[in-house]
Length: 206
Image (cartoon, rainbow, N blue to C red; front, top):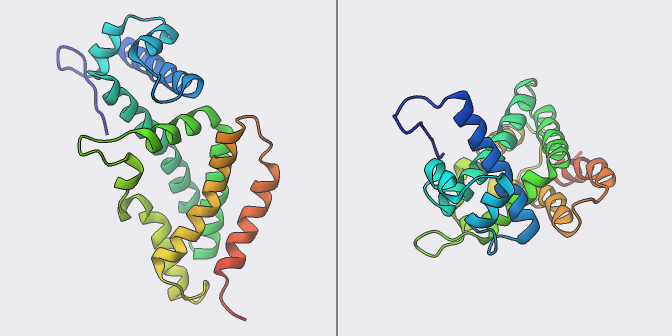
């Protein structure tokens, strides 16, 4: 996670925190309007109403800023799912909470999610590897635990854990794909049907 401090090394002031949030929001808007390749510091600065030097002061470079956007967007999604899952103890209820909170958050935070996906798909690290290919098992640790516990308790059918995770993630990804096609799309049907499809796919045999 990108951590910022004031130029003196002290904790950021309220004004500095607000300015960083303003720049992050401008970066989200720019990526959504122009796409990742054309989201230059100049364009982001124009939308934020600040000089390019202000962005460099807080984030050092365009790459640092856009990686911070990714961290900001998906940490918020993780926090929502964590809180929803923590309210339940059995795997079936936890999975329903995980899926439902994910879908609701994506629907309610469309600009942030679409910009985050655009950056993840388009950004390449110093080694040339796209950001989306650098994911690890830690990124799906909560889902892996829910599904693993459910299989162990006979709530879900026995599948390779990686396959079960991929099934759930692929279904959830249909929502973000729809938003990339049409940011104003009605997600009502998907939000109703995806949980049903998930449980049909993972249900233990009678």
